[in-house]
Image 1 (tube, rainbow, N blue to C red):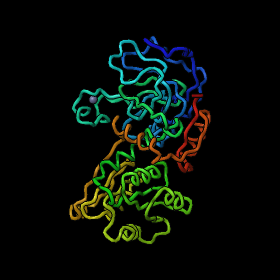
Image 2: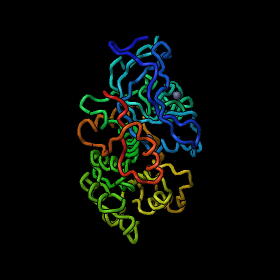
Image 3: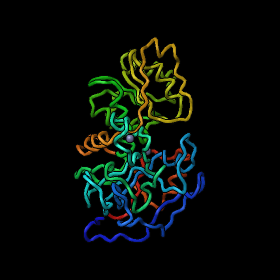
Image 4: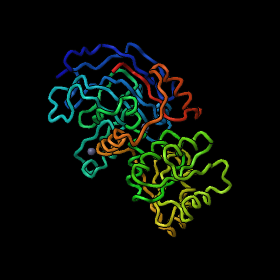
Length: 361
Ligand SMILES: [Zn+2]
Ligand SMILES: [Zn+2]
């Protein structure tokens, strides 16, 4: 085994734990830390400084998705920290002690199955999911995997990098598979939200024109400052489909990236998309999406699911952020505030992203 020189790994730590499906979160200060000698080959111990909070963490706590989480569970999958130990007999590690790395939703995959070989690592039958099937980043120390942690570029601060690791990668990958090219229009329902505001920026970085769909003057101002070319307020609009089409010159957008957790976003997108357009599904309501077969065929619409991103997608999404083209708008809180954050998430009170300060860098 190897441990970062001059660093002492404590026996216990503070961690936010969900003891059982649907039960309240407990902040424990005496949770054991896996010691360097106990790490398996390929495992690394990361000292977390910052972690984002994602809506998925609420699903993990409530266990209301078709795929069930483990329990007891430490949630979190937007973590940034330093590698303080690497398991003995880890061959060809792409990271080293002291590296500042990010931990994503996809914690590990086998890298050798058909899906991993084809670049669908997230669909690996042996995939490990941070904060879902393995403990995540809502703790001072987390065990992760050398093959899958992502090195954070030096000029990107840890708090700013955290939410790129899930919200950023997810929207970036969604745009990557949207079949668009420079100058095309993309519709972004929920553009003022946690994923949406990043989608606006990644779309602009890719040279796309953005029609932002959301509601309220504050969100309108924000998305326009981020570069949105057109704005449709879904609450004041009398005919959303007509307004989105009009905003793009009449024919409708070439693609729509639906991040909303409600199925109406999908139904409308089929209606306003341009002929030959692509509907990228990123939001995950556990519901039928109501795509009309006639119009899907008649308009030659492509429906494309997009699930997080690969190791390469994460590197690209972080590089774009490090170049100053994408900035996460977030509010800073402490790990102990996580209970309140969950409550606010449940009541839809969170506007942008929340990033927790877990420990000093
Ligand atoms: Zn997430
Ligand atoms: Zn695999």
